[in-house]
Amino acid sequence: MILIVSSSHSYDQGTEAVIEWLNHYKAKFLRISLEDIYNGRHDIDIRTEDESIICDGINISQDVNVILFRKKEILGLNSNHNL
Figure (cartoon, rainbow, N blue to C red):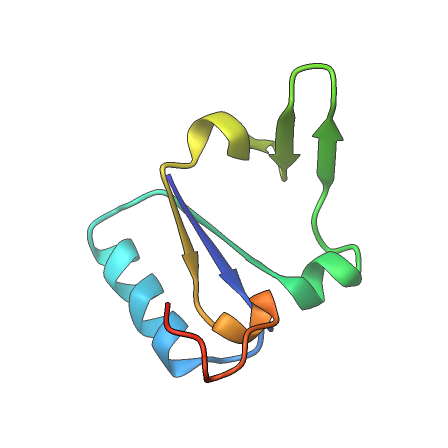
């Protein structure tokens, strides 16, 4: 499964193109945005006993193989950093 993390859930041309491609190939993915997390739009459970993170019923710790950070600004990096 692919986890897409974006800064906002509003329309983002690049993110939408990736999602269209994933839908075309019937790939499993979850898109979350920091905005949605801040506003409580996702059910997130951090379990210390087994070191897992559950988001909307998906065990991110076990089920996610790839994480796509759509915007490097999410990480607090400026344009001087090379990713």
